Structure formats: C-alpha cells, structure tokens
Image (cartoon, rainbow, N blue to C red; front, side):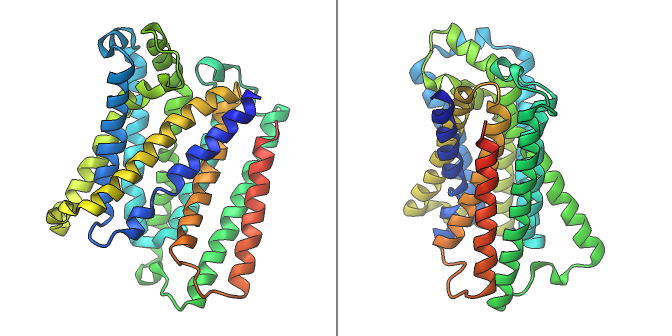
Length: 340
C-alpha cells in the first residue's frame, strides 16, 4: 500500500512542478526572469526555511548534519542551477520543442538508471542491480518513454508547420545548431542534480531531523532548505542579470503577477516536499522509479500547460493524431516503469 501511496505522491508532485510554468504564459508584465526570481525566493528559500523554523530547533538539526552531504547536495544543486540557465539559453536559441526533447531525454535516462548502478543512501541502498528483472523493465520503460518524447516532438513540429510558424533554428548555421543541441543535452544531464540530491543525500538530512525529534512527512524539508542553496542562488543571480540586461526591474511591482509568480514557487515547494516523501514510501526502488515517473509526468505537465494556453488551438489532422499516439505511448511507458 505504501508503494501505491508513494507513487501517487510522486505523480502529484511532478504534475505540480510540471504545470508551474503557467505564470510565464499568463503574465503580461512579468517576463521569465521575474517569475524565476520570485519562484526561487518564495518557493525555494522562504517556504522551506519557514517550515524548518516552525517544526524543529534549527540549531539542533545543524549540529547533527553531515558536512560531507551538505557539500555534496549543494554540488548537485549547483549542477541543477547551471542546467536551468543552459535550458533558458537553449529555449531562446533552438526553441522549446527541441530543447525539451534533448533535456528530458537525457535527464530521464540518467535519473532513472543511475540509481541501479550507483546505489543511493538509506532505503535506496537496497535497490536491485541494473540487469535484474526490475532493472531490465526500467530500461525498456525508459526507451518507450524516450520514443514517446520523440513522437511528441514530431507532433509539435507538425503543429508549428500547420500554423505556419517559423522554426527557431532557421537562422542558425549547422555548427551553431549542433552546439546548442549539445548544450541542451548537457543541461539535461546536469538537471538531474535536483533528484540525485534526494537519492544520495536525503538519508543524512532526514536522520538529522529525526535526531531533533521530527518524524512527520515534513522531515525532508531540511534537505531542500540547506542542500539547494547554491543552485537557488545561481538562478536568482541569473534572473537579476536578465532584469538588468532587459531594463525590467520596474516591472517587479505588479501585485497580481507577483502573486502568480509566488504560486509558481509554491508549486515547486510542493513538488520537493511530496516527491521526497513519496520516493521514501516507494521503498528501495523509490529513487529509480520515483525519478523516472517524476521526469515523465513533469514533461506531461508541460504539455498540459501548452494545451491550456491554446498552443494547439485550431490544429487538425496529422499533428493531432501524432500527438495522441505520442501521449498513449508515453503513459504506457510510465505504467510499465511503475509496474513492480
């Protein structure tokens, strides 16, 4: 039963962060950099630290923390922070579609399969080997999901052709395209830092919280409050640099869109809390299954946001058929990955 509950929590958490980009679509005054800034400050700094101070003696927790894991988790978060910057650069240079397939494909493979090879901490240390039955099922599932991502990418390209949209890469040379494709792929590898924090460092932070007397589902908050600092600051600095470059600091004072951007941050906070607790409930396979299902559902959430904001409005025929086929294959892959 705990496996099912954990899997549901992972799915809900992934849909929460996967749909969190809606403020970027909805905002008229705010640009991406404003939403990113408040997402980081409110969702990944203020809320985790507020939770920490509300549920435990922070000094007592700090006294029990493993310095090695604090450093390692922040290295992982730094990789994730750099990946976000690379991702946004590739969005501008080669577009959302091709960036998405390269980034999601790379992160899916690494986040799902690496925990089978390099065991995580705590309960994740008991995960089976890559060539075990569960490992082979996961490999097949990842290949199916990756195929679905390719098909959905094809559907998006067909949609743009149907709507007469210009391809983002049309002004780039062949060398420039290859370069940004490589950047997006590297970004996908680095983006796994956020889930590898949970896989390889989570047990240490949770143990420190338990020693301080916290045994609720919120005991994982220390991991995100302390272990994510470097990655958070990379994103904050990047968003401030964009505001400076675009002369857009004055747009920060739009109250309604400020609230929307904070909603983005809250959805990210919800993702971290539910994801970490859900993977623990899944058990030894929590790292591999949790990471893979989360990656797939985050991708699905982004598709939903696109649908909700009219990206497919008026599209008919082949693009829609290919899109539906891709969705079916995607969910078949997710079901197979969850079948343990």
